[in-house]
Image (cartoon, rainbow, N blue to C red; front, side, top):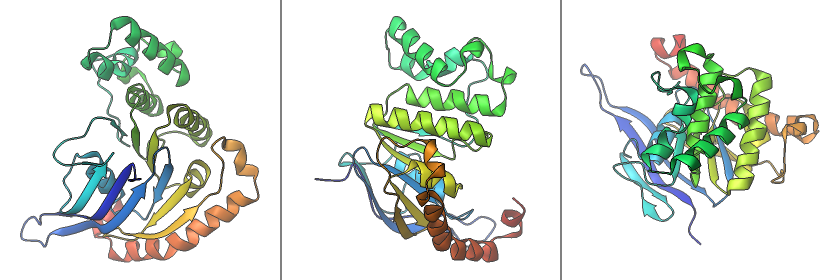
Length: 270
């Protein structure tokens, strides 16, 4: 059976500017995600994790290699069935919370009554019931990010790509949102690829964690967590949890040191 998502020899480079050499940001790398699998990706800053999301989603072309989703070539534009949540606030400032979350459903031509029901359920799930009529400017950064997450998940994508979606949230809310994400993953049957800087988050949420090298990012290690599909944040008290985070750090630490040495002054200050 073909993988739900597969990357073969995928690399991405950016043209040089002001006479500089092209920037080789990613790969080449091979990667596969099975249907219904939850995969986390960790790596040092600047290793190409966000570039990986852009290429998989179809928002940026691969310079080399092939990306396939449901055995269809990903090229040119985001294919149907893939939902993306970025780390930046992408809420629409002219729409209310309810309007933001229902935006994609309305564009699909979904009946107004169904949109209303789905939006109400998503608002309740995200803990935003008191803010349904509020505008993004009236919300905290973390609340705006929850709106963006809900806007993607309400579309019921078959592959969910998450680029540091909880970065703007406090530690307690991150655990809560992780539990809610796991519930959605279990009930939807969607495959998930989560980009995160948090080894704890990766070890807790994923079936499998991929560790990327310093730029250009390649897969240098793979760690199976061994958790069952019914896992929750209660696993932070399991003796295996720190063992997993230590295993991930042992794989990541040399790459993180390499990334610091290769960083430009602008990257080092970021």
